[in-house]
Length: 202
Image (tube, rainbow, N blue to C red; front, side, top):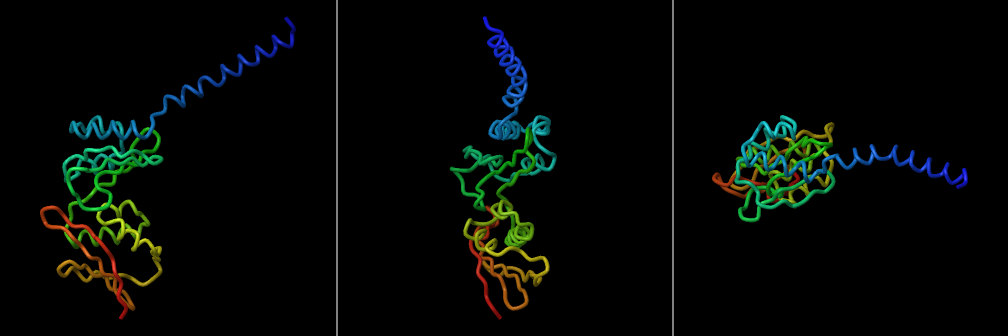
């Protein structure tokens, strides 16, 4: 055997030894679907202790406050965003269930469909726009309504919006030069959602 061959074998073995721990650590890292499903199962069992090991306190509180029956379909994950949706019941909002944001080994935020009044959904959607948080908007509004309101970025230095209340199926926000009209649908029993948004000029 040549010394060159023996040196090459030794170098290869050393390299493998160095990379094994890193590979093992990577393999051991939980993937978002596994973390999300474990949290969902803990919620189904009403096991807050188990849920607390998998999610932040705010995420646990949001999940355990969910007002509807449990979603019946795991819709998969896009990156660290994992969805559980309803197929047998209709709930308000385009989100249609639960959205868990997974970071590392924990769920850091849970978005949920909401059971709210007309005025509350209007205010929740406006707050989502202010924050630039489309997922919050999807909790209480249709995809079309979210797309409309987020078409323009909120300008904190722009004109203020003043809530004028809700009349029948319309909740209005006035501002200098016009108004934004949120058209809501739903009922007290099921909750309301913003279906569409229109604008009028003075």
